[in-house]
Image (cartoon, rainbow, N blue to C red; front, top):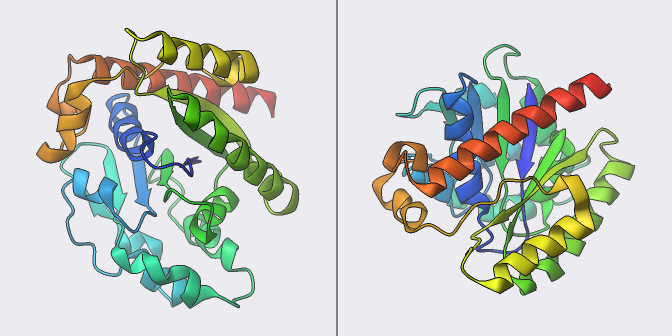
Length: 258
């Protein structure tokens, strides 16, 4: 299984949009995908039609249980979900003082059946707290959605520093797989300039694909469908399918390099 954290500390960066729609686009390629919603707002869960997941991960992280028992099968073939919960607001306080708290999620993921899913996507909260660190400890790769806006670049540096610290201290196999420009308005020079700055700074970590601003993407959560189901011919669906293809390509390159 590939375990990929989708994270950005800045809200509105397209993080949940990317997690949900990458999951659906990867499932179209016959991969079995498990999306784990770590965000107390549970936006990814609502998007996929699970409005109430109970205490969910909170109970597992602070107590006992098996992660596989929390899995829901969504209405979309190939996409499974561990739903988020507003109980996760209290997880840092509940786990304060617990030795190795940041490794609990990794152990839970390692307990999953090895052949049931091909890819695990971790939809992280917009912060740099315990759950994001836990996701980085559990993951092999990181996808960073970045809004095509100048202000979004400033927060990116803090996230990259956190990734490096986790890599040095807790997870030496961790690597940034993709920095994905999102909400790109191709009509505006500012969006184009931000994308070019990202490519100049991060090289091939920024794929040829960008996620264009698209009204259908904004509408899709209200209909509890990923963009590939809600508007399969839209630019949003086209872009996320291309991003999924890039992610699979990079996975093969990473495997060959081992």
